[in-house]
Image (cartoon, rainbow, N blue to C red; front, side):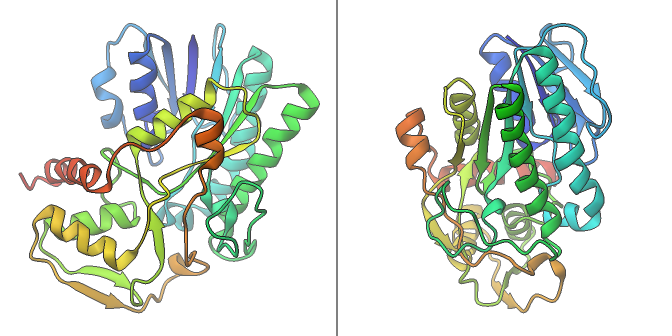
Length: 316
């Protein structure tokens, strides 16, 4: 197949490029490098079945030739990014999704939207199931990301119902692994970076909020399984093993072998407003319809991720 991946130089997108190339397909990565980096795809330079296009998907998308699949991962998913670039976040979720869907329609290609657990907001249902409509503050600082993805899901289903486009929607829960940006503000690179440098791990409040972490290889396998399936409705893909942030901090310190301590702080910035108190996917649909289950244990995934950051930060 010939596959376009928007956001293809990003964290998850670059791993998808690798896996589809390994499976024998032709891959086009499209990215404007706002948060992605060519470092993530540098190893693919010169590959006979790989092409990179530097383009902002909020503008009209042109790709010559046929396409069989369009995977739309272009996004600004980190709190640091969507608070710094709120309008661009809304534009990539709306205009970018519209342009990517228009391309899929024109090429008669199957389309996948990379959505997010943030469509559930600060959930009142736990664990989160796909039938839950969410608890989102549309006018809060996080609303620019949450609502951009909720709109993108609605637009994707509109193209499916009105135009007959084959669509898939994956709701991605907290994912981590090599190629994350060290400065993206999310908990995994924050904690690993602090632990590697011997700094205190800064935990908001008392660290009782929960998350469930999925290693990137597992996520990519889930996305590819969904893309190859006949499942049209949203599907959660994530690891259902929930733990508190303070317990996660202790595990990071242990895995890294650091002498860092944990410092509890009271947040005073917009990044934590409307931050979900609990986050954990119900993966019944992914398991039953796709035969997918996460395979990588958290400790193993953290060891691989820490090794990546140790090199990236020059701490070898």
